[in-house]
Length: 197
Length: 222
Image (cartoon, rainbow over all chains, first blue to last red; front, side):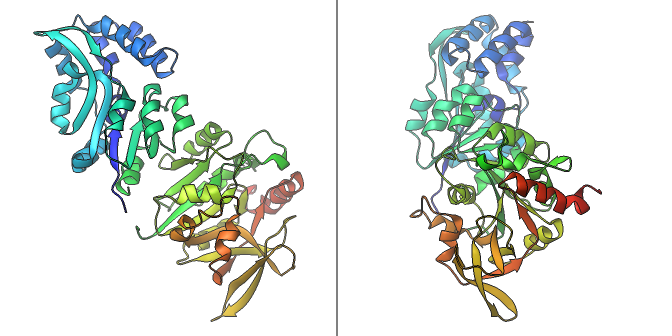
């Protein structure tokens, strides 16, 4: 049987919580961030627009401080263990920012794709390029399995040979269920399903 | 292929004839939805797939009340396809045996438990009760009835209930039967062993009332 290649969303899939709200709490900006995050996950605002607005709220925090917060975020340990076992055929595909998640990605030890930023020293200046998940996935080996939970994962799932809407942290976005081939609401069951591919 | 069995519950259809505004697997059976009654019998099964289509979210929300370690499989073409398409999707990437359980079929809990414990391939037979039965011809082999042919016209003692355990590779090879029924796929591999089960299928309101009357002794009394 062919060996599938896996690509995973980060926030709410590999991590057991969304990263940006955790970062926002360090600035006391939870309400504003919660509102922006909810509308992004529901697909009410295009992901790129929402990401830029959320980053604008948070860019006052020094990069090392944000990296420290990100390293402390809860992880979906079963998925992390799976990623490490299958690192040669796995990748993380996230719209999150390279400068914020670099140390976490190094700790996970898996290939990754993210949005690209411009910085000066410890200061985030802005987003140079928001990741296109579809573009990132087009370059990955086939057959491809995509796992995600948010509205912005739909373009990745649409391209995949096996498209999994993951509901282990919160219910997957409605738009994902229209393009998914499978929906799984337990991390353990997800890993069991993927191990068979 | 991995040894063991995958249970696939086919719940994608609209169930138009019954007249409810929801899938047949959600009809109330003495206080619990039909799919809840089925799931209660699958506690020891570690690999369950539920194929969804019509009102998928509603079916998913109901199943999650009973267990979360289920894989939901989408049949987005549910309006144009039938149970064979759903079953093939559900069986993909599964184990070497697939046990097919239709979402509109209530099997007596004792008989479903016996079926789940049965090894190898078999077709689940029952007394003829439905409006459009798939009759089965059988022949005895080593003290067990084997199904030798299906018929839509020649009345026999038993009909095929839809409950089936079959080698998954047989389903994978049925891609040339896109509009076919599950029994068209099975027909190619007869003769196959059988087991007899007590069950009721729901297609019409009369079927539904008959199911409620039949299941009262083992559900309503609980």
